[in-house]
Length: 106
Length: 196
Image (cartoon, rainbow over all chains, first blue to last red; front, side):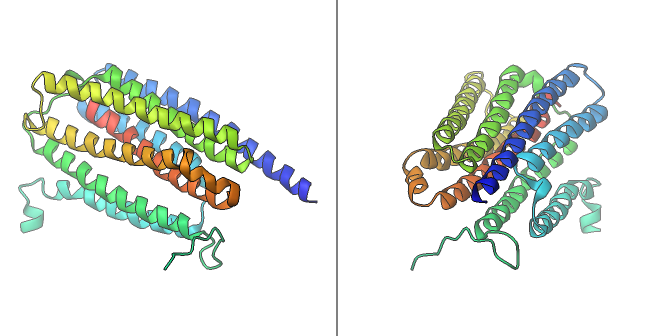
């Protein structure tokens, strides 16, 4: 029985390794896409949106597959959900202060 | 008093203590870099003029560094997978490759920084360079930190594999999570600083 369980485990890891290689190829392709899009010299708002979209896809691939977030426990998701909420609030601060800080001071 | 290290999964969380610990640490790291990203947005939106990164910085070198860091993430996860397959020799090769990739990244960064300093482009020159050196400098420190931990597991720390392979695999998994996070940060730094 033990060897059967071990074989299942090995097959499982082999499956993961195939996914890692696929993700690696996808990340390389997306890196080329990022640089290629930058060479098009698109208007700044469009360029920012596209660049961040591609970076988000790449980041998600790393987080989901290399960091195994795709099959993580609920507690980790809860911690990260809280982090994302505070992270967005942090990035939004400059937007609120954009109008000479009226939102903050008004 | 020793702090007991356990790889047993807790019933209440379904996780090992180390796994929760590293993710809480990474959450704090997100906020650290988040504060600097927010500073970048504030500086950029408040500036009357902001240079495109590729007019000042070296995009081919940064692209090379992106490829190097992504490759190191793959070798890192393969190092962990090797331990899961009970292949310690393969682990050493992949972990060595990960450390080597980190070294290449830092050498490339050294040439980039040297070139900037040589041309009189310093953090005090303008806000773009100030935030560029701050963000990439902090990221570089993280690369060094990750390399030190990985080098420990490649070298002296690897003795643990003989006495307790489960602990060792657990620790390598956690150092891997940190290394992937460092890669993830660079994935966002690259377009933001160099291409936009």
